[in-house]
Structures are given as structure tokens and as C-alpha cells.
Image (cartoon, rainbow, N blue to C red):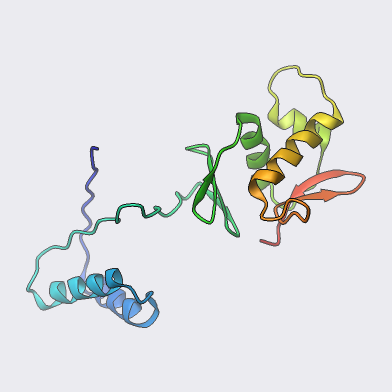
Length: 165
């Protein structure tokens, strides 16, 4: 696999701040301790550079365009959804509906509005069709589909993505 290597030049004030942050609020892991020691070596002059690698199996931080709500992460660029780091396979329309609701979190949409936002071509609008997609989505993304946290039903109107997460 081809690796991209980035180089960032740090000034001593930033390295000092990072050391302080590592000492006071970093998780108690070997990696945090190794990073702190690497920064100390830079400050003391016993090292000129420091190479950092994300360990195998570690999940990268979601990109800035990802939507993170509670344990759920939605990455529109990669069209991936994960909960607690585990990828959730969605159909293209399930992803489109979820992404539409999540990026408009807190806003209530009728079934027809969801349909118009997601389907680009003419398609038979049927309330039960949207309801079926929502039901399938909940089974996949909700910890407890019978008591949804993410996609909420607004009785008599439609659905919204929770703005409380």
C-alpha cells in the first residue's frame, strides 16, 4: 500500500504546549508516553525530527466534512457510516436519506420533502416507501430501533434527525 508522508514544522512553543497537554489530559497509553518522550527529545535537541504513524487497525479522525452525532459518524465523501467505529453497510438510497436528515439536523421534513430531496428522477411517491426506508435505516444505525435516538418520528408531520446528540 502506498503511504503519503506529510511533514509539519513545529515551533518550540507549540511543542511545549503539546507536552503540557499530553501530561495533563492525554489517555494513559504507551503511545501517549512515546509521543511525550519524542517531544522532549525535540525540545532538548537530541532529535531533529519526529515521525508519527497511525497504528494498524486504528481509525483515523473523521474528515472535517463528516457529520458526527453521538456514536454515529457519516462521511459523505466516502459514503460511509459507522457507529462506535464499526462500519454500517447502507444502500445508496439509505445513505442519501440519512445524510439529508443528518445535515439538516433538528429540522422536520415530511415524507414528500424527503422524497423530493433524495430521488432525482420521477419515482412513485408512496408514504409506505419512505416509511420502509426509515424502518430499514433504524434497524441498521440505531442501538435500539424500537426507541430511536437518531431518526425521530414527528407524528402527523414526518421525520427529523435528532438535534440533541
